[in-house]
Amino acid sequence: TLNYQLGKYFGIKVFKENNKILKLKYYHQSHEYFEKHGAKAIVFSRFLPIIRTIAPFVAGAARMSFGKFSFYNVVGGIVWIASLLFAGYLLGKIPFVEKNFEILVLIIAVGTFLPVIYGALKSLFSKKPIEKQIEEEIKED
Image 1 (tube, rainbow, N blue to C red):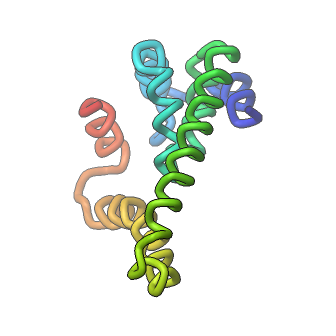
Image 2 (tube, one colour; image 1 turned 45 degrees about the vertical axis):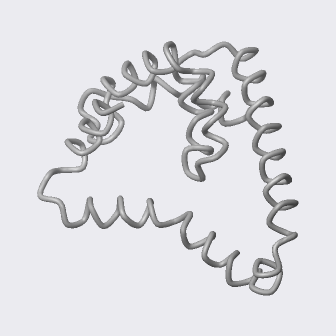
């Protein structure tokens, strides 16, 4: 909830027309997105490592009501924890998983960061400036 409050207080102030990454246009687009899909975005952000951190800030910046944010944040947390417990229960009964647990945890940990690494490499080797890439990704949503 701290990240939500930071987004609510600082949100629009960090977005500027001439800022390369945090353009005012992006604020308006995120506000519109949260008006349309806010609840789903908060619940499902729990399952996405980087998005899980950013979503509360954007929800605050987009002026989603604190009550609505809190409710869906708790729902998302319960669904996330329940799914992890259920997956652990099911996978824990498989002998292969039990024997190779450390390797599987390492694979999952590395797999979590692959999208971040991919995005960084794409940005590094792309001929487009980062702000063009962000605009294109926002338009795709």
